[in-house]
Length: 204
Image (cartoon, rainbow, N blue to C red; front, side, top):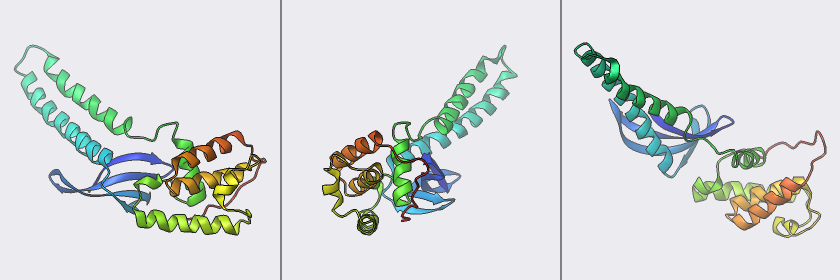
C-alpha cells in the first residue's frame, strides 16, 4: 500500500509503497506519481518514509488509546483520560494535512518545471537515467525553438527574453547547475511575457 504522501502539487506527489501486514512494516520503494497511481520510481524518499510511519502510527495509536481511555473513563471520575488520545489525534491530523507539502517559495519553480518539461518533480530526486533522458529532450526542444545559440550562452545575454529564461531555468535544473538555474530564475522573475502568450509543454 502507498503511504507517506508528500510534495503534492497540481495532481503530482511523492508516495512510498510499503509492505503491510496489519501495519506498514517495510518501505519497498518511493514513486513520483503523476496520474493517480501511475508514476516514476525514484530513490527511497526519506521524508515520505518518515511521515508514512509517523502518520499511520499516530492514527492507529490515537484510535487504540482512545478505545482504552473510553473504557477506563467508566471507572474514573472525569474525562481527563481522553486528553492524551485527543492530542495524539490532533497530531495525526497535523502531520497528515499540514505537513509535507511544497513550500510557497518552491511552488512557482515546481510549476514551471511541470509547464516546460511536463513533470514537476525536482530533477535531483529522479534517477540519473530518467534525468538524462528528459535533459536530452529539453536540449533538442531548445534547439528546435530556433534560439540560435546554446542555452548557457543565451543565459549570458542581458536582453534574454522571459520565455527563453524559463527554458534556461529548466535546462539548468536538469543539468544539475544550481547557480545557472538561480540566475535564469532571477531573469525569468524580472521579465514580462506578453498577455496571453502560452507554449505547450514538452512532456516527459
